[in-house]
Length: 165
Image (cartoon, rainbow, N blue to C red; front, top):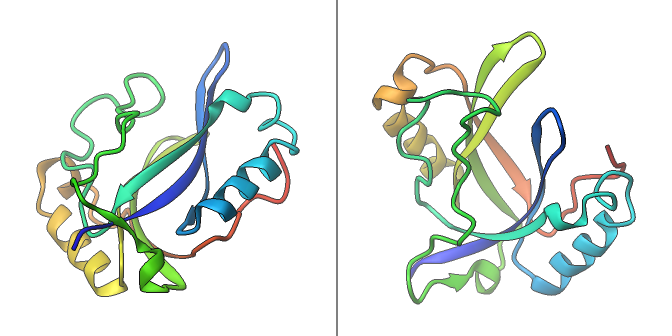
């Protein structure tokens, strides 16, 4: 069975740059909607309300296959498609009664003022997340930066922002 998790994200563009903020993973759509409403009360998120997006990430799948093989940073950044890319018949992980999911991301320092961090995938457990890191380290777009992977444990249904921007 293929499962997905909801992600609440915010991306906005102004005159000088694009910025993306991750607000949390959710398995409960009602809690996700409450988090979205809460975000809109915070400075910045309320200023750019159209930047809030709900995305579905299929679990145990590497969503960013190629690594840094083109221009990095805000110019030319290859965000994931706006559409959710999940297998047909995938189900929410809510039925699994999980407390955590594990996110694999990769950072690249562009200059002293700008890092680029991208989500590679979301996994059911830490072992699968670490296996994904080992797999990615062999790929051309990642192999020059093998120490820049991050495996993070995220509590489900936890809104990560308490202030705006």
